[in-house]
Amino acid sequence: MELLPHIKLVRIETGEKGTFGAWIVNSEVFCSTLELPWKMNTTYISCIPEGQYIMKRVQSQKHGNTFRVQKVFQRSGINIHAATFARELEGCIALGESIRKLKDDRRALVNSGATFRKWLGIMKGHNEARLTVASFY
Image (tube, rainbow, N blue to C red; front, side, top):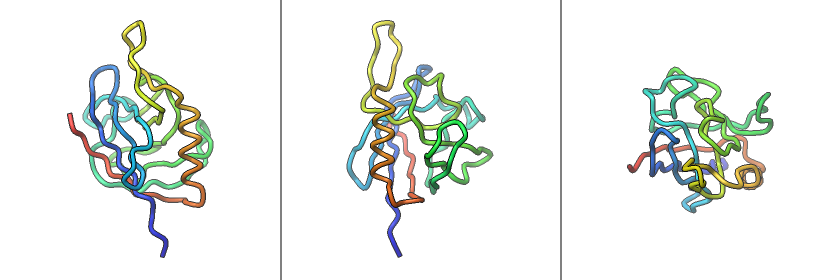
């Protein structure tokens, strides 16, 4: 039986501009993450609860080939995809090269599209992965 890749999402900063963290693949930091702030797990406006999940490869109408977090309490459609700003998310998780503070004081993920494609390359041949979500702020 093949071992599933283990992904850790470690949240390190949160506020109204978003929740930022690190995406760790098999014990190695791969990239930065962006999610919505915690709003009691409310659909479309909150990040997901801390915990352990399975992600499965799906074909999303909006995001194409991606992975979806399974069995999130009272939630569905939590995809991994590219995004620059928290306003582009509806409860999903975005991957990017790094976090930047822009001149107008906004917080953003940079090189999100390229980073997301690189992660999909790493996941080639895998249709599932384990995801652990933890916060340290």
